[in-house]
Length: 391
Image 1 (cartoon, rainbow, N blue to C red):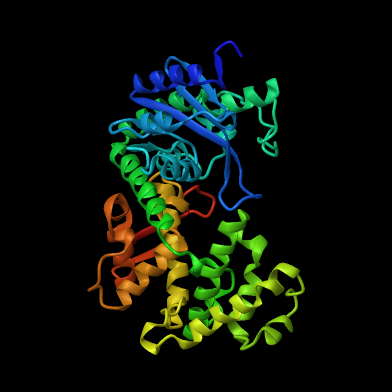
Image 2: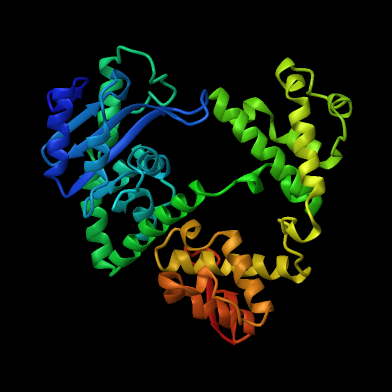
């Protein structure tokens, strides 16, 4: 605990902010509770520089605006593991993401390690250091925090800068530093974009709805978001995805029709009945040309078979190039490639043909689709049993 500074006063916060301002690279992590409120409740901020470790308590009522401004200042690099929620906190409190993001989990997968590695496994594999776990189910809202909790929180950032240096060295040896930067930028871009989107398409079961049903679902989702925000509750505590989809399918015309569905016996939902019926009506009244597009592609039957083959070949090429297969190509990436090829290859190139992915596998996969390449098993007992070669 000697190297950890616990910050719960304005004076201590000013010192931590000054340390951040002096450091070009910052290790950063957060502890939060996400299951009880509309947005995750921030409970602890962990920061590491080459000068020390700071645990900043946001529940003490301090003004953290200078902290967020310093953390996200232009030119400053933030090192955060599996950083999606950390970037979201930056967007919420600083109104901007980190200027430069280095996610060791992503970086490790691009230089020969598995993906995704947990914090403990990452530190062990990269640095050979054993880190204690055991506080993942802690309620971080409770005070005071114990010594064990503080040490656990500090360990989350203690090794981040050293891990970054080791991974950068491996990337430099493989000429992949640009890959790491690109993936960090892409991750931030996706998070920023998703924060500004309506995410009704992600409702479980939405893919089975026709366009009119999707229009109703979108209106119901908007109602649920507003109700959850006002009540400061997770949206699914207001109305579960299964009920949203069921209402969208049945499109009840009256509150009585709505209440005939199982699950609508809660007083809060009965009170909201007229609003829900009005949301259904808005979706039903939408002009045909304004309906959402189907969420499922109308794919030919061969797409599934070809995509499975391409996925296997892509995974084999990933192992050959010491890249985690999950980072090289998701099943969605592969399907996009096959759709692009079936459509004549005239639209914008899919992700598998762009950037570092296109460099290492793009040509091989396209040649596979055209029949110029074939794949065969060369040694079933070898780590790389497949070989992609000209026919």
